[in-house]
Image (cartoon, rainbow, N blue to C red; front, side, top):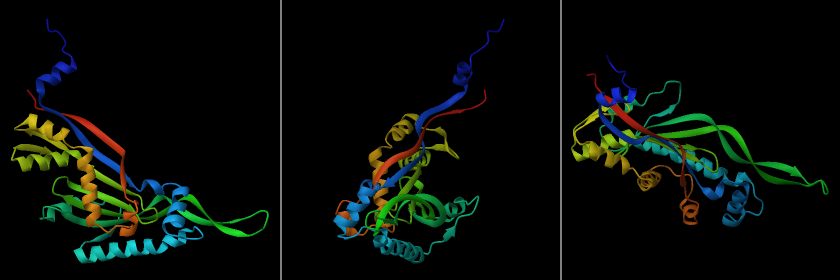
Length: 259
């Protein structure tokens, strides 16, 4: 008589590699003090010395940021692509021969939370004055698709409107592949994972070593290299980008063979 086996028993007999690692991560990149109307007022009236707070005061910053992006694209000899459906990055990766750099820059209109100015009337006097409110609008976003020597492919997406919030996207499995290659450890790669590895213990240690500090260094490194919306005087005054996790998946990967 044959005793039925559990799914766990069947998997255990076939698994050749198991590890746990961060899969894809999507992170918010933002200046904390500029996420509220009060923070915007402080920036304009205290830091910039504006008598009347109005978002028209930051229009030159927006124009300069977009101009810097266009100059960066031209100076690096990059493609500036208006995104369409099924846009693919693989063709740029295949042609890229450097250890790191920007592959191309993409542009797309997306909905974003922004600050805008509207005119409000005083009920007593009838006078009007500018009033800053939070709003949403379809605005241009610029995607910098790059290759990092530690993280391999990533992208950093900037909203082109104040307060220029951004998103950072990376892949933990691509990070692991690059680290294993640096260590000289033989492995077999999957599209989004690792099928086999000559040193599974090292693989797990490398996966555990993808810390918040390393992700922070990745952001700071590329903020220094890419066009930055905030001038140096703003950053010196504390208007600097911070990170928070928007979406992350931690995957326990089991690779198996038929027996």
